[in-house]
Length: 275
View 1 (cartoon, one colour):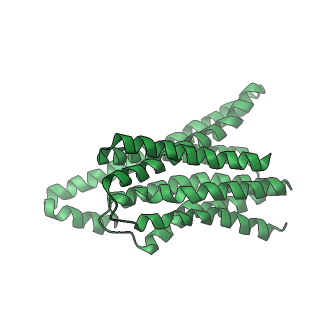
View 2: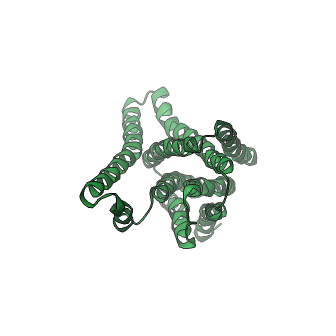
View 3: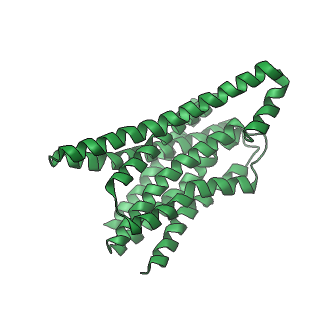
């Protein structure tokens, strides 16, 4: 299989994220269903957090058990730093945005706050959260693309194809996770905004595939996975707040359970196909 064909299939694996994005334009749903859908996205992201973090930790543990102390310290430092940057950078950015809003409230009055937010940031808090989710998933998908590209670079084409199919299934559910916060918006997002979210979340799969074919590097993979894990954890905490606002514990519990089942189910399909 040629490089162009591998890159094309890597792009397809990333673009399946667009399958779930149109749900973001479905408005008029009752509070119970909104809570259920938002919690389902949270469950999917909880699976991704476990999947990403365990994959990032694996080479660190391998270096430790094999007695390669220098390699272990280097990878462990990358893991800790990447996770901290992925989590704390979003916390700091969110705090900075809230501080700007408070200053606008004091200087311009309550009536001008909404106008200030839209002129300064251009997006509502729910849309910023959707962008945060897309960014975290994009980092995760970049690491998936690296796995596809590195498998192809080692001439393990059957493994590369299995990864493309499995990651494509995962990305189809991730699209829904991205648009979950938009259920609280009074107006449906435009198709253009959904397209931007899809490119941020799914495009890195293609970029990772291209880089993975050209350059195999374990340290880069650990750093990217750690960044993704940190950002996904932040998003999970935010989505839990969204679900709590709807006030239905039963809907939230069922949604998280379904999301976990979907996440692990597609992962089992990937493992079975590999076997």
